[in-house]
Length: 353
Ligand code: KG4
Ligand code: ZN
Image (cartoon, rainbow, N blue to C red; front, side):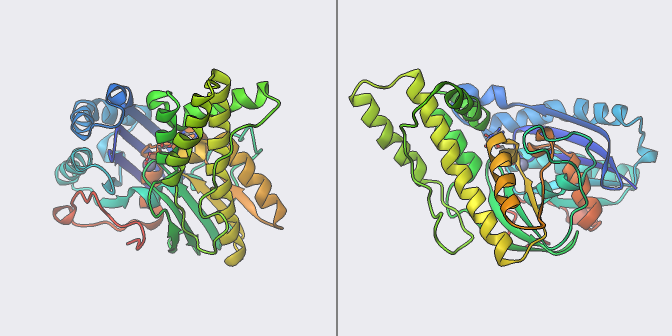
């Protein structure tokens, strides 16, 4: 079965053609991220306009890569939420039009839940840091989805069955990376900029000077909270600034500590959930799962527990794309009458439908 999938929930316009939920036949992603840089954050109006401008070319490119025509496609999958309304509408209306014209079934997909299905996609790429290769996922599994807008933990008991266990009470992990990057003067560089600066620090420094809190790391819940990190960074930074120690080296030291603080909490909560639910596998996904230090630390933590396998997609499948939308539609999607499909910006991630 070949699924043609569209993802336009935020500032990426992505289309993919995937066979049997695991084999990528074509995948294209266009991003308007650079256009938002001067505004210090995503401008929904600009993102929506770019979606409209890009969708046709991206769609054609994915079909060309897959050597496919509409008659080769068995179903259309589309992200219906959560996300920005203007952006979502572009994908949803495009998918509905294709379904109407071609008569193909259409499958609505929840973007956040779909992220974890990137772990089921075939990839020969070996993870350079934690030495992880594609393996069959054994259930029950604990799935951590960490993106720009979400930090969610799920218990997965089969390819279809999920139970939401906890999530962030305020900022998402990706948001914490993005806001910290801005505070350190990295503009819209976000998580990748913090990762790069942190690596520089580790290589060049002997002493680790900055200390930040690990919010909620010791409580028993499976919830997270990252909003306090910004205040802590500003307060700590002020100390260095008043004593005129605000240097490149100090900024790299902050980046290192920010990455350590966020990843420590993510690892600790996933470890706790894995023990509580006697999980056999751990799945990482979402843009933050591209973070090398998170991959490395999670892998080390899971090695401490016996007989657990950790799964993480290659970085390009962690950040937004349409491959996992197709995979999720294949494994747990329900074809729906196109008339009743609507863009839903606040679609719940706690009660998967
Ligand atoms: O899943 P995603 O592409 O989009 C959303 O659904 O939000 O995630 C984007 C988030 C951003 O916050 C970005 O800074 C973060 O993922 N991210 C990273 C890395 N690459 C992307 N965070 C830390 N380290 C990275 N290497
Ligand atoms: Zn995403």
